[in-house]
Image (cartoon, rainbow, N blue to C red; front, side, top):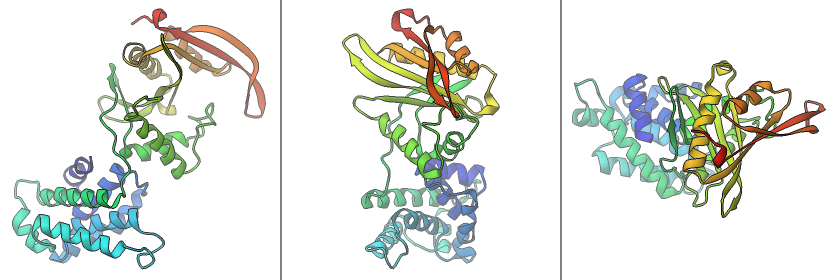
Amino acid sequence: MLKDWAREAYLQRNFNCAESVLWAANRAYGLGLPAEGQKLIGGFGGGLACGSTCGALCGAMAVLGFLRMGENAHATPGFREECAALSAAFRARLGALDCRELTSKYKREDGTRCLETVLLACEVLEEQLQKAGALEPQPGPGIRLLTTRLVLRDHCWGDLETHHALFSHPVAMCYLPDIMTHSLEESRANLRAAIREIDAPRRRLVFLRLELRDTGEHVGEAGYTVTEETPAGKLAGMGYFLRPGFWGQGYCPEAVEALLGYAFTQGGVYRMSCGCLKENTRSERVMVKCGMIKEAERQAAQWHDGAFKDRLEYRLLREEWKP
């Protein structure tokens, strides 16, 4: 994944070698660096712009520092040795540390320029981080569902920036204060929980990212939580929410129909429950459109926005589901 992001940065976004490694790591590892952080590494490209130490190695070293340093380098036991190990591994893999030597060996005139150097730097960085135990576990391929307009897929660390933008959005999360986040660290923890579930032997959380098929733009989230397992199948509770810019365009029913299909045919779910506050008419319309059946209207069942409010409960059983 790191190399994929680095290739995009270098070839499509026109970042230099140093910027590409840092940008790629920010997305692959969920570092949470703001866009302005790229400015700190830009001057290291081209071997400090004079053919000296390789910019890709400098970018890799910056990532190592971010993930491994404490308050400062001198106060971090073993950090100097890890930096030396990264440099040694880089030299062993590529044959040199300096840009002018590497350019003569790896630079291409086919438009890819120093891409090979950037990708090799990513390989070395990832190997050294794994040895140091500095990487979050990378998930397997996970779930990927396609609809007419959407991709529903499991999360990856590269989602952090847009994940945080949605989960901390006061309008989008108006009816979900219990999972709304208030800092990047809270969003990172939320994303971490979703990623760790992907390879779980008995997966409990199936929450998927919704993206437009043609552009990859983040639309929202949809998924379910398994609350109980029975001989007949799993009992689960479903939820969904979109970025406000995508409301009212039919994306939510489209995603929920695909999710229900997966749950009943591949996820082992027998009963799916869902609910909303009575005033949240948009959410109720999604349940109705997807064939869910109203079971209850509970009076003053939930405290929300300073008052008790009525809540609606819907369900769908496997035999009631219509593909």
